[in-house]
Length: 141
Length: 141
DNA sequence: TTCCGTAGTTAGAATTAGTCTAACTCTAGC
DNA sequence: GCTAGAGTTAGACTAATTCTAACTACGGAA
Image (cartoon, rainbow over all chains, first blue to last red):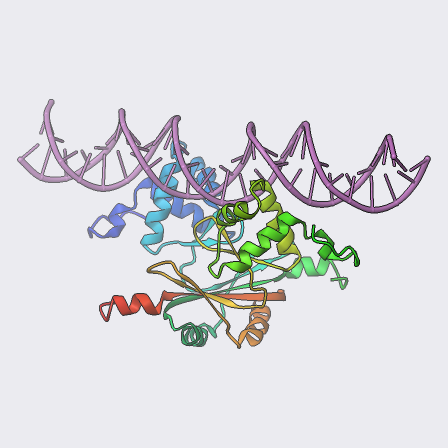
């Protein structure tokens, strides 16, 4: 996120700290926790504090630049891909993989009908065994 | 422990503490957090400890008697309904509602294909506005 | 029956994630 | 230079969860 201070938009608010947080999330293809981000951001910006990382994450989330995910383990994870997509979690090694289910629109409609909610977004999580693990474990699973 | 020492099955392991935890989860139709469960279980079993509740929850989860859910707020929630079902979360009031999407089997197949995972279960979360909230807020939303 | 090992429970300490707060810094407008 | 506002910082605080070590109950072997 560079330079351009022409328009007084949200971009103006992308301080060095927020930029560093965003860069960390975008540079990693895994889904780091807030703490992972803190550690990595400190490499670029040694004085950045814990609270700033959380503030930045909240800001970036509101600005729609990152997405917050949460799975069983209490620590939120962050994802720089902001288009709608789904996740698969390996029950063996815990790996988290992105994929996109094109049926999502239909899905949301069906879910909204069933639940009688006014739909905003839908998110699907597949629990299963990832290709690596199922290969290692062979057929005994 | 309750009587019947006939079959040495899993049921043998349902100690009073675990029974109390299970009862609490089943008696409530909301989705209590571990702490809610701890508080309620203490009413039946005043000496039960925090760690025992967590141990029991882990045991019950492994035994397939309860399900753990997790949403943004760090505290896991527990659900006594063990049949597969989906959840809708109100973005306005935070209410969590169960529903069942019959398309789930197809869904899982499609998701497994896309992600190349060996599927075990699929879980769908609809974010949206619940009937109550959308009624209150009327059309200005 | 007594002893021993195992499983489960207990209390409380420790750890981890995340929030809060008050002081500090930077920048813009006066 | 002074002031206000936004953002940052360090560190205290809170809540969720796990760990640990001592204790208890119970079943099987001697």
